[in-house]
Image 1 (cartoon, rainbow, N blue to C red):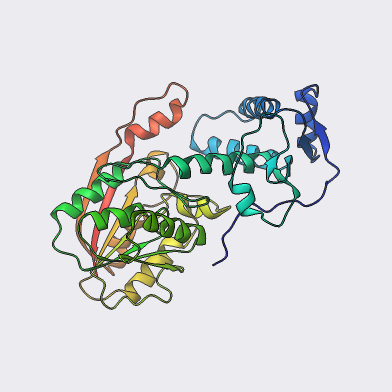
Image 2: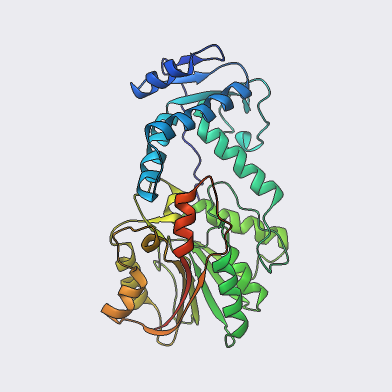
Amino acid sequence: MQLKYPEPTLYDKDFIGLLASTPNRKAFEGLRRGENYCFEGTYGTAMDFYSWLKKQINQVCPIIDYESSRANRDMLRELCQRVFVRVANAQVDLTNAPSIPWLAEFYPTLTEFYLPFTDILGINGAWQWFSNGIMFPNLQHKVHPYYGAYFPTRTEHLTLFDEWLQRSKPINNAMDLGTGCGVLSFYMLKHGISNVLATDINPNAIHSVGLDLQRQGRGQQVTLLQTDLFNNVDTSKLDLVVFNPPWIPDKVNGNIDLAMYYEDEFFERFFRSASDALPKGCRLVMLFSTFAQAAGLNVVHPIAHEVTTHKRFTLVNHIQIPIKQKPSNRKSWLSDIRKNERVELWELSC
């Protein structure tokens, strides 16, 4: 299984040095012209410029709703892909840069290379989550997501699933489709489901769950498989398939995006595959959100559309709960969405 890491640049791409003395405006204009920069000096200088760049993009592309937030995000991503840092002997070549053990693990044969600064930020942030672990509601242990494995930052849907498991009849064989960091599998283990198959198209996710299972000494209780949807899966004995699909329609740019955003035809492909693969009586539990509708995006609700139009599945239960989130003065547009958003659990029967 080949894990996925940011692609390193092995040579100096005519980088322009970006130092504390470099005028921010000059660098910004150069980035917009397509020039490539490389930080020199201190890590603090790099962080200061990155913070300034985000504020500058907020002025050029102000965020007033979800659509403008996507445009802002895309502009930041495009410009940041041209701001690099040098890595030498598994260390970021900036004074006072944090030590990131994963650099040696990810690039064991490279003594010198370059990465976009945002990739360094991503690797360092992911290392902290992995090292410290994350506690989720009503789980008795932390989850340690590996680099590139999706983990939820909101938990209302996890609580819904935990409560659903408490009142469900005994389940013998379950599948956690698109497992990410494996949190739904761990809830199922908590409720006594001893035969769980966790799948994901992302190899980093499979690796992540495997490491956590080893840490807990539960490697025999979950079978791991890297695959897309139900390909190469023996579904004949499944009682339950649980799926927390992406909630937001958008273009996909990487592994994490696959867990957050869905492109056209994704849900049609999923439901068609599930209808063909799952045995009669198997339950399909989907954790979803009305974010797209609350944000005013012109899309139909994909699960409601499936239930009312195609009728390949029988609706057993549909639960909605409001979002419990404090309003943010900094992101009023998002707070407005949260006021109308609902998190959902859909229980379907094959």
